[in-house]
Figure 1 (cartoon, rainbow, N blue to C red):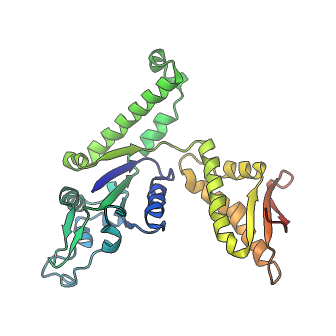
Figure 2: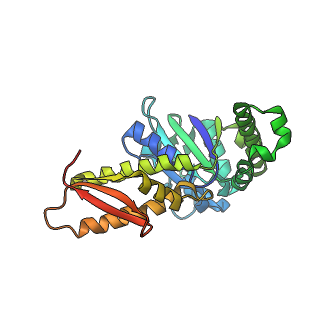
Figure 3: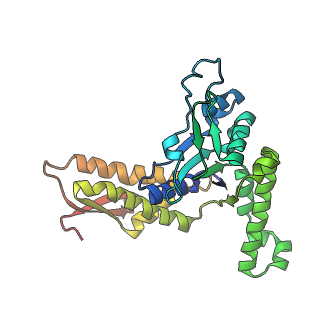
Length: 293
Protein backbone atom coordinates (compact mmCIF):
# COMPACT_ATOMS: atom_id res chain seq x y z
CA UNK A 1 0.00 0.00 0.00
CA UNK A 2 1.36 3.38 -1.05
CA UNK A 3 -0.16 6.73 -0.12
CA UNK A 4 0.85 9.92 -1.93
CA UNK A 5 -0.41 13.49 -1.69
CA UNK A 6 -0.20 15.96 -4.57
CA UNK A 7 -0.50 19.58 -3.43
CA UNK A 8 -0.71 22.54 -5.77
CA UNK A 9 -2.87 24.91 -7.79
CA UNK A 10 -5.66 23.80 -10.07
CA UNK A 11 -4.84 22.76 -13.63
CA UNK A 12 -1.19 21.78 -13.10
CA UNK A 13 -1.50 18.05 -13.81
CA UNK A 14 -2.14 16.39 -10.45
CA UNK A 15 -5.05 14.29 -11.69
CA UNK A 16 -3.45 13.87 -15.12
CA UNK A 17 -0.54 12.01 -13.53
CA UNK A 18 -2.99 9.52 -12.02
CA UNK A 19 -4.69 9.01 -15.39
CA UNK A 20 -1.34 8.49 -17.11
CA UNK A 21 -0.29 5.93 -14.50
CA UNK A 22 -3.59 4.09 -14.91
CA UNK A 23 -3.03 3.92 -18.66
CA UNK A 24 0.53 2.65 -18.19
CA UNK A 25 -0.50 -0.08 -15.74
CA UNK A 26 -3.98 -1.09 -16.89
CA UNK A 27 -4.16 0.18 -20.46
CA UNK A 28 -6.94 2.67 -19.77
CA UNK A 29 -6.83 6.23 -18.47
CA UNK A 30 -10.10 5.61 -16.62
CA UNK A 31 -9.09 2.40 -14.85
CA UNK A 32 -8.90 3.86 -11.35
CA UNK A 33 -11.35 4.55 -8.55
CA UNK A 34 -11.96 8.27 -8.19
CA UNK A 35 -13.74 9.85 -5.23
CA UNK A 36 -14.48 13.58 -5.31
CA UNK A 37 -14.11 14.58 -1.68
CA UNK A 38 -16.13 17.78 -2.09
CA UNK A 39 -19.18 15.49 -2.16
CA UNK A 40 -18.21 14.13 1.27
CA UNK A 41 -17.95 17.41 3.15
CA UNK A 42 -20.35 16.37 5.93
CA UNK A 43 -19.42 13.75 8.51
CA UNK A 44 -22.43 11.54 7.83
CA UNK A 45 -21.20 11.11 4.26
CA UNK A 46 -18.55 8.75 5.63
CA UNK A 47 -21.26 6.12 5.17
CA UNK A 48 -20.82 6.60 1.41
CA UNK A 49 -17.44 4.89 1.85
CA UNK A 50 -18.19 2.32 4.54
CA UNK A 51 -21.86 1.70 3.82
CA UNK A 52 -24.87 2.47 6.01
CA UNK A 53 -24.55 1.28 9.64
CA UNK A 54 -26.67 -1.71 10.76
CA UNK A 55 -30.30 -0.73 11.29
CA UNK A 56 -30.21 2.08 8.75
CA UNK A 57 -31.78 2.06 5.30
CA UNK A 58 -29.50 0.30 2.83
CA UNK A 59 -27.34 -1.39 5.47
CA UNK A 60 -28.10 -4.88 4.19
CA UNK A 61 -27.00 -4.04 0.65
CA UNK A 62 -23.53 -3.00 1.82
CA UNK A 63 -23.38 -0.25 -0.81
CA UNK A 64 -20.27 1.90 -1.20
CA UNK A 65 -19.06 4.42 -3.75
CA UNK A 66 -15.70 2.63 -3.83
CA UNK A 67 -15.10 0.42 -6.86
CA UNK A 68 -13.75 -2.83 -5.43
CA UNK A 69 -12.67 -4.15 -8.84
CA UNK A 70 -10.47 -1.12 -9.54
CA UNK A 71 -9.05 -0.99 -6.01
CA UNK A 72 -7.98 -4.57 -5.42
CA UNK A 73 -4.96 -5.10 -7.63
CA UNK A 74 -1.99 -7.44 -7.62
CA UNK A 75 1.72 -7.01 -7.00
CA UNK A 76 2.40 -6.52 -10.73
CA UNK A 77 -0.79 -4.55 -11.45
CA UNK A 78 -1.76 -2.57 -8.36
CA UNK A 79 -5.14 -0.94 -8.08
CA UNK A 80 -5.25 2.85 -8.21
CA UNK A 81 -7.41 5.10 -6.04
CA UNK A 82 -7.75 8.88 -6.22
CA UNK A 83 -9.25 10.95 -3.43
CA UNK A 84 -9.60 14.33 -5.11
CA UNK A 85 -9.49 17.60 -3.12
CA UNK A 86 -8.90 15.91 0.20
CA UNK A 87 -9.12 19.16 2.18
CA UNK A 88 -12.87 19.35 1.47
CA UNK A 89 -13.69 16.06 3.20
CA UNK A 90 -15.36 16.02 6.62
CA UNK A 91 -13.39 14.94 9.74
CA UNK A 92 -15.19 11.59 9.98
CA UNK A 93 -14.43 10.89 6.33
CA UNK A 94 -10.73 11.59 6.97
CA UNK A 95 -10.86 9.25 9.96
CA UNK A 96 -12.20 6.51 7.69
CA UNK A 97 -9.29 7.09 5.32
CA UNK A 98 -6.87 6.99 8.24
CA UNK A 99 -8.13 3.53 9.14
CA UNK A 100 -7.58 2.42 5.54
CA UNK A 101 -4.02 3.77 5.57
CA UNK A 102 -3.35 1.98 8.86
CA UNK A 103 -4.79 -1.44 8.07
CA UNK A 104 -4.90 -1.59 4.29
CA UNK A 105 -8.40 -3.01 4.63
CA UNK A 106 -11.89 -1.59 4.95
CA UNK A 107 -14.84 -3.60 6.17
CA UNK A 108 -18.21 -2.46 4.92
CA UNK A 109 -20.53 -1.61 7.82
CA UNK A 110 -22.75 -4.61 7.11
CA UNK A 111 -19.75 -6.82 7.86
CA UNK A 112 -20.34 -8.93 4.77
CA UNK A 113 -17.76 -7.35 2.46
CA UNK A 114 -14.13 -6.31 2.83
CA UNK A 115 -12.19 -4.11 0.40
CA UNK A 116 -8.47 -4.88 0.31
CA UNK A 117 -6.18 -1.90 -0.34
CA UNK A 118 -2.92 -3.72 0.33
CA UNK A 119 -2.09 -3.96 -3.37
CA UNK A 120 -3.22 -0.44 -4.15
CA UNK A 121 -1.67 2.92 -4.90
CA UNK A 122 -3.62 5.68 -3.19
CA UNK A 123 -3.30 9.25 -4.40
CA UNK A 124 -4.81 12.32 -2.81
CA UNK A 125 -4.87 15.80 -4.30
CA UNK A 126 -5.26 19.14 -2.59
CA UNK A 127 -5.46 22.79 -3.61
CA UNK A 128 -4.34 23.86 -0.16
CA UNK A 129 -1.76 26.64 -0.22
CA UNK A 130 -2.54 27.42 -3.88
CA UNK A 131 -2.72 31.14 -3.11
CA UNK A 132 0.51 30.91 -1.10
CA UNK A 133 2.24 29.12 -3.97
CA UNK A 134 0.99 31.78 -6.38
CA UNK A 135 2.37 34.63 -4.27
CA UNK A 136 5.63 32.86 -3.55
CA UNK A 137 6.46 31.65 -7.06
CA UNK A 138 5.43 35.00 -8.52
CA UNK A 139 8.33 36.64 -6.71
CA UNK A 140 11.50 37.06 -8.73
CA UNK A 141 14.95 36.64 -7.17
CA UNK A 142 15.58 40.37 -7.63
CA UNK A 143 12.77 41.09 -5.19
CA UNK A 144 14.41 39.00 -2.51
CA UNK A 145 17.89 40.51 -2.00
CA UNK A 146 18.51 38.78 1.32
CA UNK A 147 18.13 35.35 -0.21
CA UNK A 148 20.11 36.34 -3.27
CA UNK A 149 23.05 37.39 -1.14
CA UNK A 150 23.32 33.81 0.06
CA UNK A 151 22.15 32.03 -3.09
CA UNK A 152 23.53 34.00 -6.02
CA UNK A 153 23.96 30.83 -8.06
CA UNK A 154 20.70 30.21 -10.03
CA UNK A 155 20.70 26.47 -9.30
CA UNK A 156 21.15 27.10 -5.58
CA UNK A 157 18.42 29.70 -5.70
CA UNK A 158 15.95 27.29 -7.31
CA UNK A 159 16.71 24.57 -4.78
CA UNK A 160 16.32 26.99 -1.92
CA UNK A 161 13.11 28.36 -3.38
CA UNK A 162 11.65 24.86 -3.70
CA UNK A 163 12.62 24.05 -0.11
CA UNK A 164 10.94 27.20 1.17
CA UNK A 165 7.86 26.45 -0.93
CA UNK A 166 7.59 22.95 0.55
CA UNK A 167 7.79 24.42 4.05
CA UNK A 168 4.96 26.82 3.27
CA UNK A 169 2.83 23.95 1.96
CA UNK A 170 3.60 21.80 5.00
CA UNK A 171 2.50 24.55 7.36
CA UNK A 172 -0.84 24.78 5.56
CA UNK A 173 -1.26 21.01 5.65
CA UNK A 174 -0.54 20.90 9.37
CA UNK A 175 -3.32 23.42 9.96
CA UNK A 176 -5.85 21.46 7.89
CA UNK A 177 -4.98 17.82 8.64
CA UNK A 178 -4.32 15.93 11.85
CA UNK A 179 -0.67 14.95 12.54
CA UNK A 180 -1.46 11.23 12.51
CA UNK A 181 -3.07 11.61 9.08
CA UNK A 182 -0.04 13.40 7.64
CA UNK A 183 2.22 10.78 9.21
CA UNK A 184 0.53 8.04 7.15
CA UNK A 185 1.42 9.75 3.86
CA UNK A 186 4.48 8.28 2.15
CA UNK A 187 5.23 11.25 -0.13
CA UNK A 188 4.00 14.82 -0.38
CA UNK A 189 4.67 16.34 -3.81
CA UNK A 190 4.35 20.09 -4.31
CA UNK A 191 3.27 21.33 -7.75
CA UNK A 192 4.18 24.79 -9.03
CA UNK A 193 2.27 26.96 -11.47
CA UNK A 194 2.77 26.03 -15.12
CA UNK A 195 5.16 28.31 -16.99
CA UNK A 196 4.61 29.31 -20.61
CA UNK A 197 7.17 26.79 -22.05
CA UNK A 198 5.41 23.97 -20.20
CA UNK A 199 2.05 24.98 -21.66
CA UNK A 200 3.59 24.86 -25.13
CA UNK A 201 4.45 21.21 -24.45
CA UNK A 202 0.91 20.62 -23.20
CA UNK A 203 -0.37 22.02 -26.49
CA UNK A 204 1.63 19.33 -28.26
CA UNK A 205 0.01 16.68 -26.07
CA UNK A 206 -3.44 18.03 -26.93
CA UNK A 207 -2.61 17.74 -30.63
CA UNK A 208 -1.52 14.12 -30.14
CA UNK A 209 -4.73 13.30 -28.28
CA UNK A 210 -6.84 14.89 -30.99
CA UNK A 211 -4.95 13.01 -33.71
CA UNK A 212 -5.70 9.75 -31.90
CA UNK A 213 -9.40 10.51 -32.36
CA UNK A 214 -8.94 11.69 -35.95
CA UNK A 215 -7.32 8.45 -37.11
CA UNK A 216 -10.67 6.73 -37.61
CA UNK A 217 -11.54 9.53 -40.03
CA UNK A 218 -8.21 9.07 -41.81
CA UNK A 219 -7.23 12.61 -40.90
CA UNK A 220 -4.35 14.26 -39.11
CA UNK A 221 -3.83 17.68 -37.56
CA UNK A 222 -0.64 19.73 -37.64
CA UNK A 223 -0.03 23.04 -35.90
CA UNK A 224 2.31 25.57 -37.41
CA UNK A 225 4.51 27.28 -34.84
CA UNK A 226 2.61 30.57 -35.09
CA UNK A 227 -0.69 28.74 -34.58
CA UNK A 228 0.66 26.94 -31.53
CA UNK A 229 1.91 30.24 -30.11
CA UNK A 230 -1.49 31.82 -30.73
CA UNK A 231 -3.35 29.07 -28.88
CA UNK A 232 -0.84 29.11 -26.04
CA UNK A 233 -1.18 32.88 -25.60
CA UNK A 234 -4.98 32.66 -25.66
CA UNK A 235 -4.87 29.82 -23.13
CA UNK A 236 -2.23 31.20 -20.80
CA UNK A 237 -3.76 31.87 -17.41
CA UNK A 238 -1.48 31.25 -14.48
CA UNK A 239 -4.35 30.74 -12.06
CA UNK A 240 -6.10 28.08 -14.16
CA UNK A 241 -3.12 26.28 -15.69
CA UNK A 242 -3.69 23.69 -18.39
CA UNK A 243 -7.47 23.89 -18.08
CA UNK A 244 -7.44 27.37 -19.60
CA UNK A 245 -5.24 26.07 -22.42
CA UNK A 246 -7.63 23.17 -23.05
CA UNK A 247 -10.52 25.61 -23.35
CA UNK A 248 -8.57 27.75 -25.81
CA UNK A 249 -7.54 24.66 -27.81
CA UNK A 250 -11.12 23.48 -27.98
CA UNK A 251 -12.43 26.90 -28.97
CA UNK A 252 -9.83 27.73 -31.63
CA UNK A 253 -8.86 24.26 -32.92
CA UNK A 254 -11.21 21.39 -32.05
CA UNK A 255 -14.58 23.03 -32.67
CA UNK A 256 -13.66 24.76 -35.97
CA UNK A 257 -12.01 21.58 -37.24
CA UNK A 258 -15.05 19.50 -36.25
CA UNK A 259 -17.32 21.92 -38.13
CA UNK A 260 -15.05 21.66 -41.16
CA UNK A 261 -15.17 17.86 -41.07
CA UNK A 262 -18.96 17.86 -40.74
CA UNK A 263 -19.24 19.96 -43.90
CA UNK A 264 -17.08 17.65 -45.98
CA UNK A 265 -18.77 15.54 -48.68
CA UNK A 266 -19.71 11.90 -48.27
CA UNK A 267 -16.60 9.77 -48.49
CA UNK A 268 -14.68 12.28 -46.45
CA UNK A 269 -11.61 14.41 -46.89
CA UNK A 270 -8.75 12.21 -45.74
CA UNK A 271 -5.42 13.89 -45.36
CA UNK A 272 -3.64 16.48 -43.28
CA UNK A 273 -5.23 19.61 -41.87
CA UNK A 274 -2.65 22.25 -41.03
CA UNK A 275 -3.67 24.90 -38.52
CA UNK A 276 -2.28 28.24 -39.65
CA UNK A 277 -2.41 31.56 -37.84
CA UNK A 278 -3.66 34.54 -39.86
CA UNK A 279 -2.57 37.89 -38.37
CA UNK A 280 -5.11 39.75 -40.54
CA UNK A 281 -8.02 38.11 -38.72
CA UNK A 282 -6.15 37.25 -35.53
CA UNK A 283 -7.39 33.71 -35.80
CA UNK A 284 -6.79 30.20 -37.09
CA UNK A 285 -7.52 28.80 -40.52
CA UNK A 286 -7.07 25.24 -41.77
CA UNK A 287 -5.19 24.24 -44.91
CA UNK A 288 -6.05 20.78 -46.25
CA UNK A 289 -3.67 18.42 -48.01
CA UNK A 290 -4.63 15.05 -49.48
CA UNK A 291 -1.17 13.62 -48.85
CA UNK A 292 -0.69 11.82 -45.52
CA UNK A 293 2.91 11.96 -44.32
